[in-house]
Length: 297
Image (cartoon, rainbow, N blue to C red; front, side, top):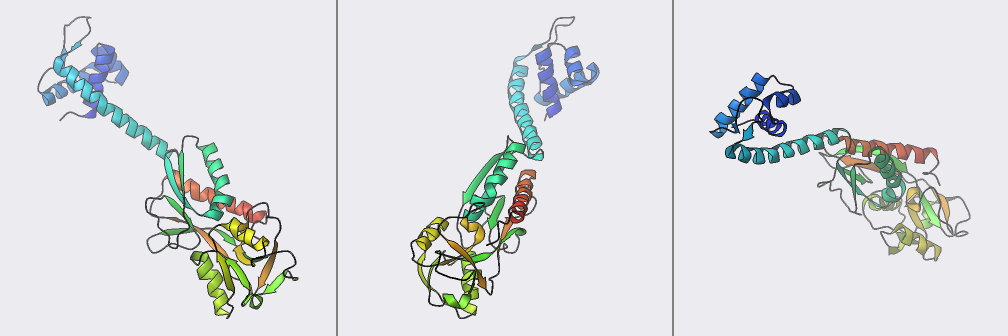
């Protein structure tokens, strides 16, 4: 069967009208170009050009017109594929990112802005899900608050201190013993991920069992219920918002302190340059948040 170079030779001759001009356009000698046309004609079983001789331009035969029409479709596909590969290596293309509230609100706005400024042709897609278990699926990067399972690469992004959130005056000390929360009303996030594995597990290990009066996956709803006096809450500081702290609440450190929430970027195998840039930029933004005191009560 004919090769791509044969189709490019056919296209150049048809466009330029003569073998000499087509050879110059492609950087070939005329004899090399003639050999490629001969190979093409053997492949398709007939002449693709009528050659009138002299200075007159060559003309496509009916078979040549058929081959050229199909050949140009093939060349367009090949050129599109080459352009896509070039954009991929340049950091353009598409990246699918899984996220959750804190990452969406605190880290990703700066990440998306910086990447789009550097790569205006890129296509960034975000999917937010408060799931109990990480599921990369077709995602390129998934931000999650614990490392991924076997077969998934986990890149640490940021650590986030857990604090007690209460109405002003509910607790008089900046540091509150965790035992004070035993039997106390608590507004809580759903019992999954960090909430289950860090917050509630560590309280239970110390024999502390708050009275959970309301659960919601909405960080702002937690804060609203705390302000309303329904109960206090234990939250990672970044889930409260950054750089502004929400009004009408006080933050207290717990004694002993709970382990921090650790946010990871989960990936699998080789990454595209754009996905690599997402992870690197997220860590860069996280360093800036830490340096600005975004993870302290």
